[in-house]
Image 1 (cartoon, rainbow, N blue to C red):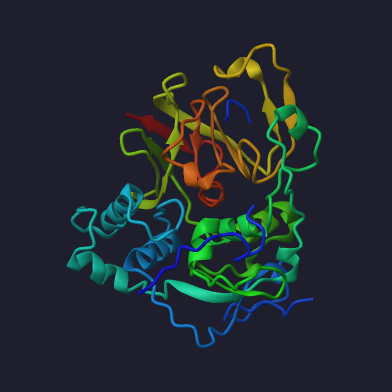
Image 2 (cartoon, rainbow, N blue to C red):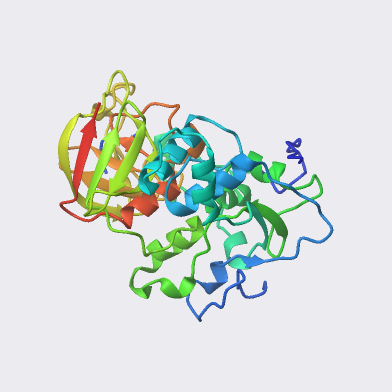
Length: 355
């Protein structure tokens, strides 16, 4: 097996806190009904003569991501997030929670076996952006733009397939380019049927399609944020574990607010009220700003509001930082995991924050 970590240069197209709230039609191997979102669907493409064997760890991450047991970014690197995802799957299956791929776990996963990667054609609508190669870092400058969108197509593709630009480079050759109609190899995340969406919330549905998240998710009866394990878990009415996501939660200055809270509501593609008074690392003399929505905003694509004032569960513009960076007390997930959780919870869902 070879995974090639290549120099980025011209291999592919340019790669470029919380406390508030004309390409072929897409089929993806399945029959897709007419839908306003059908042109965001990635169709399968022939692999040609390329020979590729994915590492077992990549295949395991793909299967567990499909089942709701996320390791954060899918990159084929065995980390503590993979161990936690395997352990969550074992718990859900009633297996010994070893965190390793023992024989019983391999047998259980075999029922959900899919190829680790697939070749896809990039839809023209997805490739058109708009993108923001000069995305400002200063909050005052961010407040002047209409949207805090993706910097480039590679960043958007990485979020769509729950991975990183570097991993997409590794899965393809130095000659591979990206753009409308281009064919690339990607992690085989779960397909999303455009016909499953309610057209009443077009902007949010477009976000879900762009993140590869289906609108129909199992209902969570309670959410548990576990500080020691660094994960967020969702349980159903029978107290069965139905999802687990790695999370960034709190810091020395803004610790996770341990206690029993409830979810007050969910805001899709929210703007962000940047209030310097609520940030220990920002001068109080800085100006308050209202930042526009977008996947690269401070709270990403979703804000799940909590009964604890100024606190919530939200996305991020830096998915690879989950579990390694710090937050201002809130619970931060990848955009795709946050969007998935947003489809699972509702007002008054209990949210327990524990050590």
